[in-house]
Image 1 (cartoon, rainbow, N blue to C red):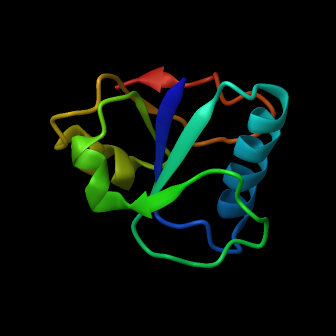
Image 2: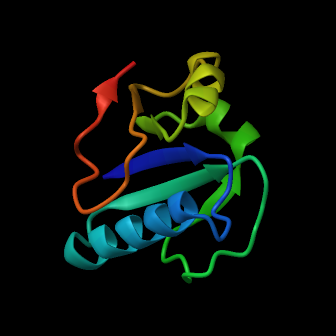
Length: 102
């Protein structure tokens, strides 16, 4: 299953580290998952990502579901026509399924 996560960056902040760790953990336990992280500002992550990363502007043509990680990214996500479903999840951790539909 392919889905996107839109975030400001995977910088060495708590949010950036938790997103990378949560997605890597889910890929390890669910090999059929194929997340793509859409970032606004590139930083080299402290954790080596096992998933592709693309600039945020590419999310407008992504057709799968997309999860926003902040209110700012959710506002931008709402302007993109292509994502099939749009969600917001501001707390990444063990269970990234706990999200609200936009």
